[in-house]
Image (cartoon, rainbow, N blue to C red; front, side):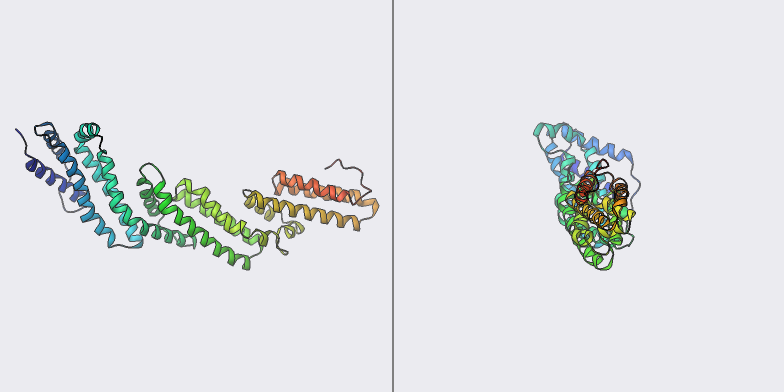
Length: 368
């Protein structure tokens, strides 16, 4: 018996509508697996008979998804804002994937035979692309603003729904169709720009309020929390870019002000024997070589000045011993505070060469 297209599609449409109502959580009897079997069988019959309705059914598949998206999904998103919109976006993306999976299964015969034969996009591809073209393209800008606003709240100490943010960002990644392009272009770039602005403002305020050690403690905590954000909801590829933004605003841009601060900078910490603070300073600036070199230069300057001052004050009989003690003292700084980094070994040697050049009595250079 040949099944006319109108008759067969009417039966399919009724079953698909029932499934959509279930997905939408509307009053509807529980889904029965036999429904899927019946729909698959109808499509199979319509594609294997003469005339073959495979092409028409392929077009109907796309129309069903487009109609559902335009008539149901978009209106539900447009009426919501901020966090409520984000919750709805996650729900709609999950529902869309469920619908595409169901339809792809019952239209499987078309995917198996028509798609390879005619070199047209697969059902899964056109189904997911529909969401990208109609929903994602319209909502991503508002979603980005809403997520960035939530991150700002969290940075200011408020609790946010991290699971929601993670799920929203998964929508960006999923719509990249196997790449992070959408995530990077539509979310990450804006978030990183906002991050730079946020920490620029923080740095301007903190350098007025805090000593260098207190400032470094805040920076250390900020970096820790930003890395936690990657763990909880940002894509792993974001971490180096995010950390670089924070380091640039909180460490690079204010390096001179913080490191050379007369009262609490590097030399003041050396003078006051603040090993923990120096260790923290080293740890924070270690990933930034051109700024770490400045700390090493300040270390050299301090050792040289203290050694020269000691030579002027000590008598000839005790100079050698006092210089050896001074050398041993700062060797501990190199090993404990500066982790034996080559920059600090180099300036240590240079500083003692300079000191020795001012002390003609000291002939033993063996401890360099």
